[in-house]
Image 1 (cartoon, rainbow, N blue to C red):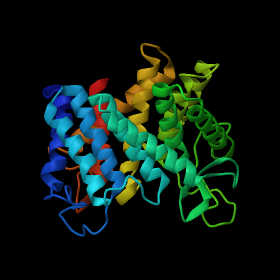
Image 2: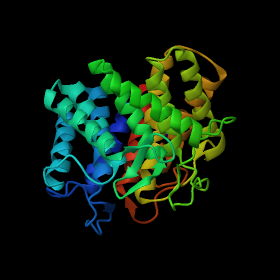
Image 3: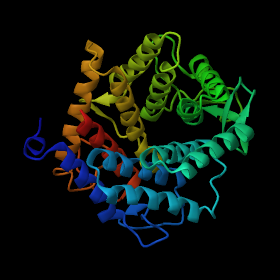
Length: 348
């Protein structure tokens, strides 16, 4: 454990990282957050990054009870709607599902029924416009490319469908969750290691993008397995599926106990997705002990220790490689991953 973590409670370090997001990227409404630091080109509306901003604000609220964190989450919800011309929808099914997952958490935090209605409306829109039988029953990535299927779309569909089913006991939600998970398992998951590939047929050649080895996909698949375990005939088997993929990600995608640099922009958020759903897995197993679970918990500690050291106790922005201090411009997607990891560490 680092000197920083021994001196400062992890919850406070997570708060530092949350506040650094505002301090370094904060912008006047309606921008809300500059896309990068130092501020540069803000022309891109990063809908799905902002969905994760809702999530991290809720993480802080649920940890601390700070109403200001909840207000920041609801402000971000409004910001997405306003900047999207009042619409919940866009052309990317994964983007919309991230927003729905965050909005559903807002419903749980506030009890506000309109948030639940939004999540259901997004689910229905995604299934109506994106689900098809090309390459097997599954969800496409985006509306203009219905024959390209990937983990980033189908993983969140499983998770959202399971969570909506838990609230509504509505069988169609679970039917889609199970079918999407079966397609993922059969099409993009290595049967021996549990490693999850990104997608298939991106270039209309029927090929799998095996060169894209992202933490994001591992997190989505293990999260989907955990959510499905809650209604599975053999929940233990589903949990073991999640553990296998989680451990494989650590074995294959880390260097020195830290995930390697996956890139900037959208890629900066990928590690955060893994940490979020690793947290869901660790919550699900509770006090269960095993060598694999110990390894996963030790990974959280080792990797966040490196993050804390490289950010001078979370008072500076994270780099895409947490073993090194930031040197140069960075997108706020990267800081979101750092916050998600620290919020998980705080829960441990």
